Image 1 (cartoon, rainbow, N blue to C red):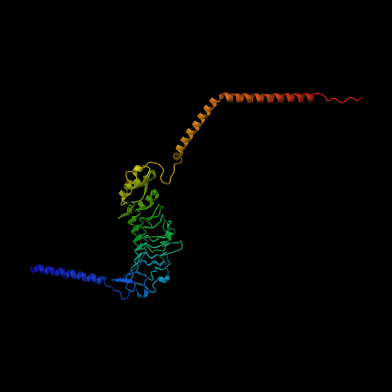
Image 2: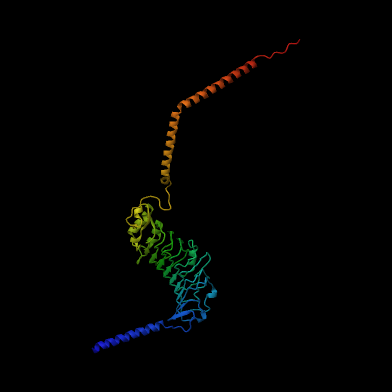
Length: 389
């Protein structure tokens, strides 16, 4: 009994100690904080743009969310002094459309490891360098649904990353954006440490040869291309991009499920690769979004019959017009038959018509011949001079 009470006492002490540690961890450990921010440990969560002079120098995480009037992240919103301890900066759902070059400067944020800009309205242009001078400590860049104001595919996306120092960047998130066709990264780009690249639900319609080259992503381990609009993956992309990772350990893991692959004969190279590769983690979920044989829709690409008929963007003109040719031939045959029947029924009238034409022509010819004889006689008869009286 005494031993049980001793165990119970130890358990109570342990629970109280853990509670004290949790309370201590959630208690604000910052010397100052803005009125619009909640504090937990060394992290701030703000409902309005913070007054920077009130942000303590030992702040390690800062979240500003729901500030819909922000729009332009100009130097006027940049801290006036360096935040040397800040490792995480979260600016989500803030209606940001423009980021002035140098805003994320490593001089102001030298320890920055995570930048999260999800659910904004960024509009990149050909000269904009959103992440110029960003800290080389950056490990996570999240741009999920960050280009929400763009109804057409994102333009100039490659310029967004042109100045990113990718020496330590491990994760790049581009999910839920209207990307369309992902551009090749600028020549010389190298994401040496990148392991996770996610493009889930980004309206991708195709992959350009060279986009995922191993020289750019030497350590890429996870590539999420699921739930896009891919109808095929070109053999050049398979050979030059994906297969370049096949010999690596650990090898690249690709997700392709949820794409509307069109199951016709042009998909044979992709199907053959899918059947042999270990790179596609969800290959059993790679299905025919559309197919020549309608019964194959929604079925796995693996094992599907791939007949050579046109895809959704292809038209076989000869096959399309063949029914029209048949109908036209039948109509012409019927017209010809009706013409023959009419000719047969009206044969006597037609005969009389041609006889009349013949008679008229003959009479005209005879009259013309008589007129010519008279003229010839006149020419041959000498003209007589009148006799003098």
